[in-house]
Image (cartoon, rainbow, N blue to C red; front, side):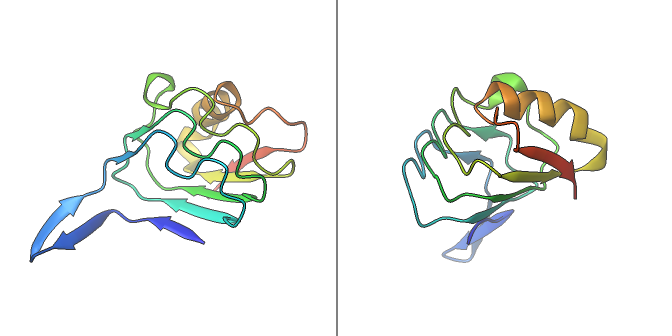
Amino acid sequence: MVTVPETVKIAGIKFKITEIAPGACKNNTVITKITIGKNVGKIGANAFNGCINLKDIRIKTTKLTKKKVGKNAFKNIHKKATAKVSAKKQKAYKTILKAKGMKGKNQKVKKL
C-alpha cells in the first residue's frame, strides 16, 4: 500500500504534499492500493500508468480538475480497479478518471 500523506515533516518543518510527480509509480507491479491525501492538487502524467495490480484507489482531495490530472495518469491499472472519492466530487471525478485512463467497463468510481 502506498499513502501520499497530507503533510511531511523534514528537520522539524511541516510541508504540505500538493503534487504527485509525472511517472511517479509508472509500471510498478507491486502497488495494489493507494491513498491520495487531501492536499494533493495535481497528479502528473503517467503517475500510475502500468500499475497493473493497482485495484484500490482512495482519493481524499477535492482539489483535482481535468487540467490538474496528467495524461494517462490512471491508464493500464487493474481491470477491476475501484476509486473511492468524496461524495460531492463523485460525478466530476468519474469524468476526470475516465479521461485519464480509467476506462474499463469493470472500473468504478464510488463514494468514500
